[in-house]
Image (cartoon, rainbow, N blue to C red):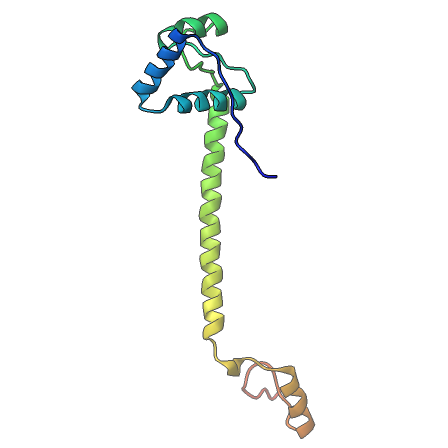
Length: 147
């Protein structure tokens, strides 16, 4: 079955209908869009909304929440702000270190890719050389008479 749109009917008085139509006209949207917005807000806030005219917003918000301004403001302790700023600086520092490490790894990979294949000694080659009688020495190429 999938998600199907359902129809919701509203019953309002003629006066309220005309007011809603005026609001829709002011916002340059359809009347059904006004209702969709209302329903979306109602669902998003779990039915805990109150629709009031704009000129009554300040009066109703100060009465219901006890605050003088809308939207309500919350004071945060300075220690919280400082800790947040410290964490942001630390995160920025760690990002810079990560970028530097990535550049270093990239440079090492480029150096490894740029090396000659002659520098790499395969173990199978060592075994074959040992069978032929010529030993392969690892280390300096000069002869040390003390050995």
